[in-house]
Image 1: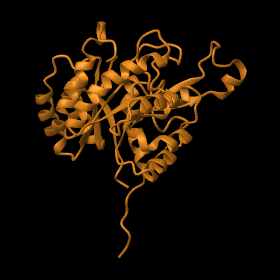
Image 2 (image 1 turned 180 degrees about the vertical axis):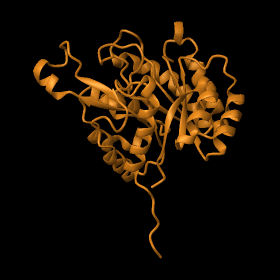
Image 3 (image 1 turned 90 degrees about the vertical axis):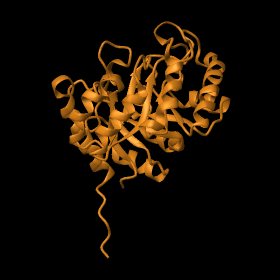
Image 4 (image 1 turned 135 degrees about the horizontal axis):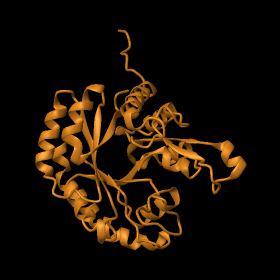
Length: 293
């Protein structure tokens, strides 16, 4: 029952400040995240210091993540592709074989228009990763995009995944999946997970609450919010079923809580929500008790 580890996301540049404070709460793993660029971060030094902090508690780094648009190479995204390369090159120093983030997208164009550039960029990144035994995974967040247009990510739903895998059929490319983003699109996440679990390399622990009464009364374009991102344990997803589906598929990765989104458990209640989610997810996973002899 311990084959699926439970942890949280931590900003890479904040890791040395944050990790010593939250490791004692019982997080088993951490995924280090960067926004658009790894910048001047000395990844080799960071890896040495982070692994030293975690060693005492037996916690691990499950992955490294970079969120930007590696397909454009312009503006604030100018360093995103190079950051993917750096994280691939340094992943082994953190004790992980997983690097994740957004695919990127050609801004303002229909989703299909980004596929050739995706194949070019991630064909090269995929080869770099394969040479170093690293897997790459893509978060399923639309970043307010749609099939018609968007600025950040093409990997936000099954139809897009089909295009991606058909165009670039590499076994070490997969998903960094979470139910929240699918629920925002009014997709039932569990049947989707059952179909796509074989492609899920890591899970983001973020849930959602859908206000079906609001949808029935005023739809999704009215003035009232109809969905909220939630910390696991406060949303609509049956996480026991999530564990069951993942275990049936042989998943042995991590579920990392993605905080700072819940409308209630945020600000001074952020860690209250995260630690509750940690205990909740551990309970959904189950406590291993050996059979009597």
